[in-house]
Length: 287
Image (tube, rainbow, N blue to C red; front, top):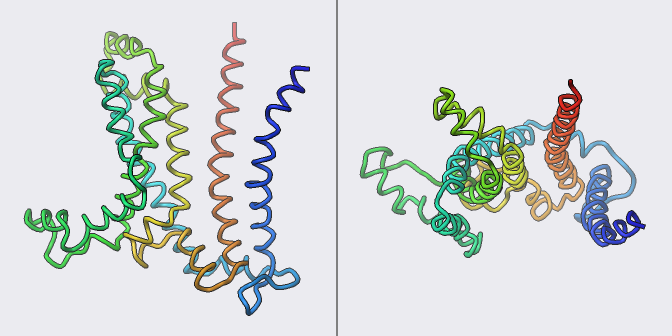
């Protein structure tokens, strides 16, 4: 009876996922093996030519660029979010809510407006370029826009709140007396942070990595507005294939690669979590 109730409660969610996630994803994979027709539609029959086209040097360059820019964005966001989450969790209660408010304030404005704001800041006549030029850090002809560094900068700004929040949620439940005990036993501050605090909030860290890395892989607006042609990512290539080239099979093939790239880290993390649970069970059974 209990299992039947659970199934009934889960049925709307399962139906929603099947209708709007699983079926469209399967259609993307199916269309990737169909030929295109001269009118921008899907031709008859089946072909592997579209999949072979993914091995073109230009596509591989964009795939590699997407991967390293997403990994770099995730790493920088994590480095910035860990001390931020730690500080917020250890702050007095009256300050904690105020600090959290500062983290979520960017969500009150439109994502598109924020990206356009960065476009204005990094513009050749913008304040950032003028300040750096005044300090002699960049030349008068240097361009901050239309560069991979600009894309990574804006992606870090965009995804940083999503990194801080899960780390803070895990840090809030962490027993900081363990860190103090490590310090009493002779551990240096960073050593206690690395060997006691980080393992204690690993679930929050894993969640933060996922919520940054997966959306970063599919970024489209940010590289389109501040990156330019030299900073295109897979999301831009999919849009070009759909709207400019009108080649739906090739767009589906690139999208299928993106889906696999998203599923791979999820599967790896699930495998690691399952392995960790087995290790805990073994340790728990040890005499």
